[in-house]
Length: 313
Image (cartoon, rainbow, N blue to C red; front, side, top):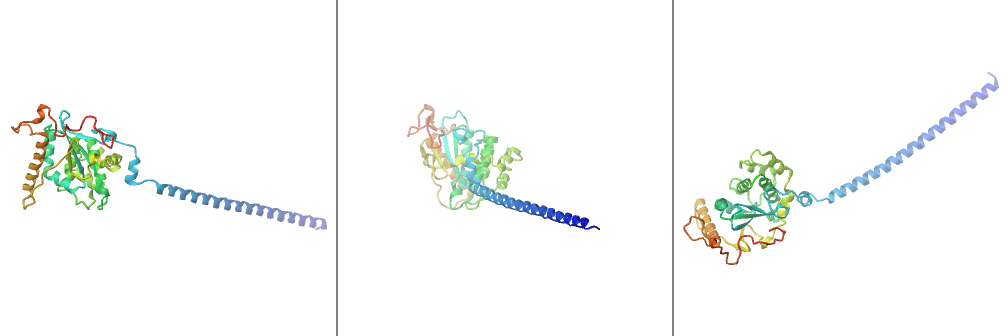
């Protein structure tokens, strides 16, 4: 091999080595750029994720979120956001207002002993009843969300029919299903659906079941909850005629059977109603309502043009 060829081969080898080193340098530089870019992207993702989590953490949840949901009022309601539940003969001249909380033990006692008499008066067209359902027991030391959850389910029942609403309310208050005040049984949809199976209009009613599970009327329940204190009423059960609060005579505290207690409770309720609205038709007693007279405070059911804090009639 000539000296010239040998020099040429060495030069070629040095060029190949130099080219390989340049290629490696570029490859390493690209790798470092990718590492930095990846790290930066990771920081941005973490920061973005943290911001998203903070935002989600600050969003209202549960029943607080229900306040912000789109209003959906059940059928068979009136007034602002459908918070007026008025049931009975539209031709009835008078309106009795009933304030209740589904978890209220006193309300359950009234419904179990006297609810039948109230329903009979509605059926007979003696008066209409405006139901205002409160949920204050959820915010009491007992805690929970059974009052609101049950009220939302009652909205689903009312959407079916007024009759379904009344029957479902009766079942929720019944001795068979109504829990102790401290037990939040109605906070579970499954329990509400179990009670609903006792109501023919609601049993196997898929639309009703879906509304309960999805909380379709949760916002409506919160709008009803906002009525707390309407007409100054902050306890349940309460009965009003116009602006007049009615009082049921107390059942004497003495030993008696449940049947005897129920009979006395119904008798006392009828006394209160007769005194306020006059004797029922067919009682043989004069009905002061027929001559157009009003109550001693001048009221005649819900007064025309009457305004509630909620903005409803």
